[in-house]
Image 1: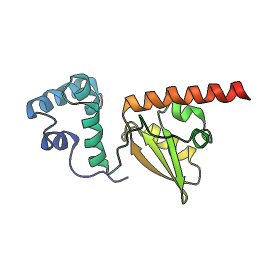
Image 2 (image 1 turned 60 degrees about the horizontal axis):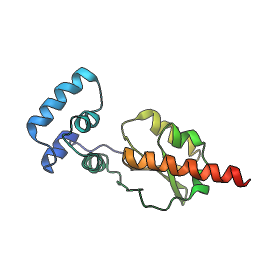
Image 3 (image 1 turned 180 degrees about the vertical axis):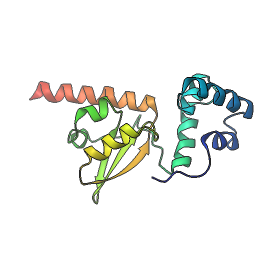
Image 4 (image 1 turned 90 degrees about the horizontal axis):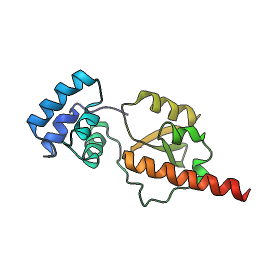
Amino acid sequence: MEKKEAKLGEILTRKGALKAEDLKDALKEQVLTKEFLGDVLIRKGYVKEVELMEALSSQFNMPFKRLDYAYIDWKFVSKFDPSLVFDCKCVPLKEEKGIVEMAITNPLDVWVLEAAEKAADRLKVHFALITEDDAEDVIKRYKIYLKGRYISS
């Protein structure tokens, strides 16, 4: 995963999703709160989560995926420790030719990136971005799957 030169704020302003004065305000607040810039931008209502994810996708050269109506192979997900999904909001999506695709909500969360790579064991990991809403929805769907699996066992 190689970071591009453009900064998040620059990408969002260039795409017309963020005003320059709102970026300045958010950057000032980020210094005070130590939050990720994207979190400040969303909290203050300057950008929508989808706009942020699209910009991060561009910045980090990662695909952005919507999982709200996507088929998820729960048997594949179940090959991994459930804490990967529940605690890290990291969703194993598929494995192909020794590469596992993992969906994450924050490409800057080193702890989650390391947990995903450790969980993949010998497989190479490719990351995709998903929204927090999609991650929360997947968690709910996975709990339902696990509940049904343990009831029928």
